[in-house]
Length: 294
Image 1: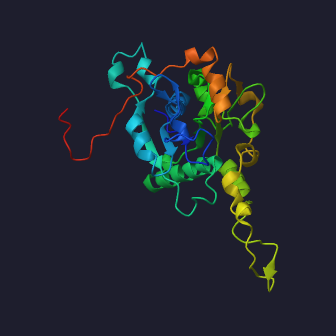
Image 2: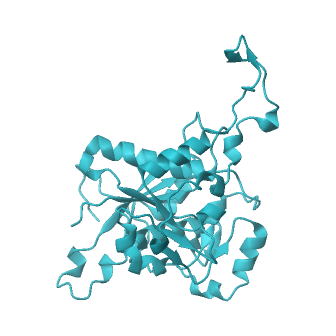
Image 3: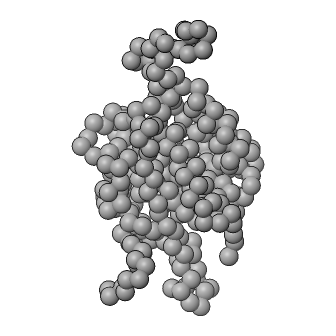
């Protein structure tokens, strides 16, 4: 068993889109009984992630957890035909739910910040357990990009390596604002966090009193600009390896109503189906010291 820890990040918390539904935008259905956030989790499973971290606000986490539970099956390990005991060698991928901190809410809680917050949380939690389980890289799967997640199965070794990996469509990647999967490491994290910190605060730093402290407040619409930062602005510094840049055959951006309708009216929508329950259904871990009477 490899000790390489690839952490899957599924960003959910961010500024609302234009759907204006009673439920969260990531819970929009893309097929019967199949939600956008579930597709992103399944993509992380195909990528070979050892853990999956869903970054969501506290008010949405219970509903997402009700759909996904606490773990999913690795779709590659579940279908090993040459294994004499396949049911005993299945690999469960734990799902962790990460809330946005109160001090970041309304200040820098864009979708890109959810990615970075999920990565630093995965690092901090793992580091407290052991240095051997610290994630080497992070794989990001977005709910608002729809494509076949199974296409990355053949690239699992590339994804779980020290070289950067990135999906693209018509030459465009996450660095162009598209919701396509990619990996990043701790060095990329530091560069992207610097971009977040370029956002404005509550005060105008150009107007200083005594040359030390700002005293003039910015207009309300100009305060905390980082909460509106786009993906292309934050992830421009991520290193690209041309050899590990994979083109997807089809892709739909569903972060708007028009894009959502374009996907539903496409021929590819018929290819999108909910995974079999053996791969994805509600599961919980047994509590410590409690017998599983089921």
